[in-house]
Image (cartoon, rainbow, N blue to C red; front, side):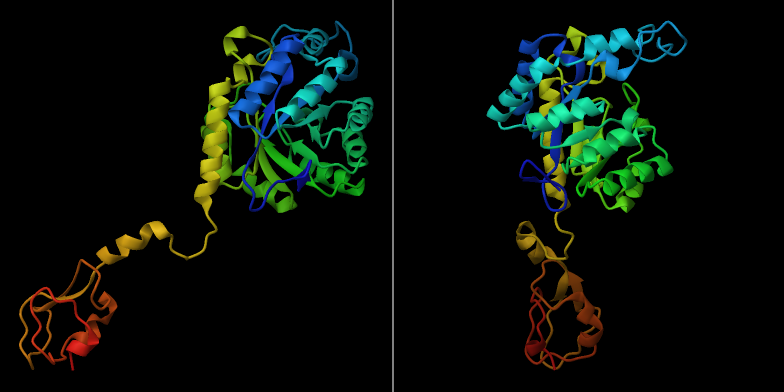
Length: 344
């Protein structure tokens, strides 16, 4: 999978995305500061969300339009999305500043108009949020652009994941990433269920994690289990508040995610039996066959005068049955590593 020329997945290091979301707190200046924080933390990409209250919901007093539980309990959907939205006028300066800082910038559209506007702006990929994974028309609209799709799977059943992937492919998407996600805000570590990555791998897509748990441990573990995309929310300070503050990382924490994920990926290696250079001197300390007593010419080699001990300069221990019963060709002093030329 390639996004803006960057290879993702396979033998490539983890691709870490900082999610801006509502952490701009209504300030473009703060949004640009978060771009800087993402770049300074070593992230590869910054992601926005492109919506308006009108594209998300209705202004209504009817049941269901006001949240009755969760981190936004008591808020109307209309007011919440009005606070959280990133104004369209901010997109170009955020995209430009991200590019200047070496970040790939893209977004999550929530309706077809947002898809078209982002495509025109030059967004190199599209993200499908977990809540929108069941919106097959939105997925189709993104897929028709021919750009890579990154789809989160929070709340999704196996059948819904199949529907989403099938729809994306049917409408032209050839590069798809599936991000395991738990749509809990925040998500307790014990609920993150990283073994779910194994099931998602069956779809033949790039694997990743969109994570709302605290800290770096879950992303690091996900990389060790095969995730090559990691997405985390980023804020400047949780104490500043905002709708997403409770499940967002501060810059130093994001830097730890980046560092830890790259170290975990480096630790995976290639799985071959080839031994690393760091083991070189240790091989000399393996067990091998040594004379543990003085052995005169013609004397048989027995378990009383030959043992497998450290260091490793003698015959390998597996040769002990072939050595026992043979006789010494020459005098063999105690502490001599055994070699075939010493015995007959």
